[in-house]
Every structure is written in C-alpha cells, then in structure tokens.
Length: 174
Ligand SMILES: *[C@@H]1O[C@H](CO)[C@@H](O)[C@H](O)[C@H]1NC(C)=O
Ligand SMILES: *[C@@H]1O[C@H](CO)[C@@H](O)[C@H](O)[C@H]1NC(C)=O
Ligand SMILES: *[C@@H]1O[C@H](CO)[C@@H](O)[C@H](O)[C@H]1NC(C)=O
Ligand SMILES: *[C@@H]1O[C@H](CO)[C@@H](O)[C@H](O)[C@H]1NC(C)=O
Image (cartoon, rainbow, N blue to C red; front, side, top):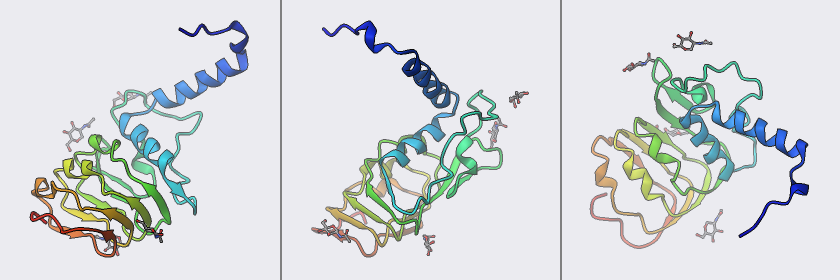
C-alpha cells in the first residue's frame, strides 16, 4: 500500500484541486457528461469553445437546471431540465465515441454528428436513446460492423448513416 508523503501535499496543489472540485461538482450531471465527451474529442477548429463552466459561475447549484443548454449545438426543453437535441454536425470533430456519456441523454430526440471525422465503431449506447426520432451519423469515418440494436429505437423516423466505412452486412433490423 502506498503512503502519501507530506512533501507532496503542497498548498498550491490543494487549492487547485479545490477549485477543480468546486467547478465540477457545482454543475449538473448533463453538463458534466458533455464536458467529459468534449474531453475525449479532437476539436481541431475549437468548435466547442463555449462548452465550459465559468470559474465564477452564477449558477443555481440545485442541479435542477442544465447549464449546458446555452452551449453550441445543445437544445433543451423550455425550462432547461432535459436535453432534447445535440447537433454536432460540420464541426470538424474527430475521435472515437465510447458512448459512456450517452446514458443520461434518454430524452434526446435529435442527434446529428454528420460531416465530421469520427472513427471507430458506432457506440452501441446509441441504441439506448429510445426517444430518438432523428439520427444522423453520415459522412464520418465509422468502421467495423454496424452493431445490432437499432430496432430499440422505436420512434426513429430518420436514420442517415451514409458514407462511412462499415464492413460486413447491415443487421437485418436496419
Ligand atoms: C434557485 O432556484 C430555485 C428554484 O427555482 C429558486 O427558488 C431560488 O430562488 C434560486 N436561487 C438563486 C440563488 O437563484
Ligand atoms: C420542467 O418542465 C417539465 C415538463 O416539460 C416538468 O415536468 C418539470 O416539472 C419542469 N421543471 C421545473 C423545475 O420547472
Ligand atoms: C444534420 O446536419 C446536417 C448539416 O448541418 C444537415 O444537412 C442534415 O440535414 C442534418 N440531418 C438531419 C437528419 O436533420
Ligand atoms: C478512415 O478509417 C480507416 C480505417 O478504418 C483509415 O484507414 C482511413 O485513413 C480513415 N480515413 C480518414 C479520412 O480518416
């Protein structure tokens, strides 16, 4: 077992940690999840530069309202309590989507990440967004097999997966 040496416990580091904790924990889970998503994306054009929590935010810290509702590409319901649209299309974004941030976004109706350079597999977690009516993942560089599970999206009206690099047959439920 490792013992923390007192020498490592610098006051500066400690106050930085505190600032970090305040800025993270004063915000609602949806905004945190979007910041976590941003942290794994490659954002060559700084398209997501307004995705941040100000260091001295005038936040109502109850966590009831979603701070991220004012961010580019994020649409919410009228009282900012749920995220209903994410439009990250044409933002010159790249990276692999793990999907681990998606589970909070079950109210999402529209999800558009078209015209970017996302790669890797399509995250299966997409198929737990059961309120989706429109899903556009076209014009990316997704590869691998198109995963099963799209039939979970019972409300889906529009699906655009055009121009990716999928291999193998599309699942029968597409
Ligand atoms: C926070 O929101 C609650 C509920 O809407 C409201 O009653 C309260 O006055 C707000 N507090 C601040 C500091 O704005
Ligand atoms: C926000 O609106 C929803 C309905 O869309 C309602 O159920 C919820 O109670 C409202 N929340 C607040 C804090 O006003
Ligand atoms: C997604 O965004 C692109 C570019 O903004 C737009 O052309 C396309 O129609 C959108 N897809 C859907 C399904 O709305
Ligand atoms: C797309 O992905 C394939 C591998 O899946 C890779 O060989 C290719 O270079 C990628 N293309 C772009 C434009 O990123």
